[in-house]
Length: 152
Image (tube, rainbow, N blue to C red; front, side, top):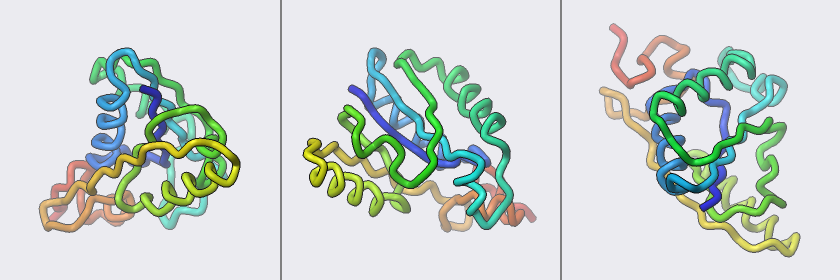
């Protein structure tokens, strides 16, 4: 299977780890995962500070190596909300609940371009100790850590 996933992945928290892990599970040991990583310019629209593209790439690489995934993987710069997903040849797009509407748009635009629809695989958000979802914004505000533990 050829799987695509995208994001800013900063800081690389439990929700991001779930998204990446599921992408590799769906691809299988002999599959391929294409990770769209937002460029510094695109990520600059966030309401919180974001590490550089290079640092975020390093963190993703470490995560993949730590888990020993054997699927082929590539990280490509993501300069807008769609990246190469409109024209690329792949089977599955993995998204969070938050980005599912963008995935639906991608399939609509692919259809308009004469491309086949891809399967959308939605990952539920990972919840913090307080029952609210883990997010980069909450981490940067100092409410929770990367694992969803409350910071007191």
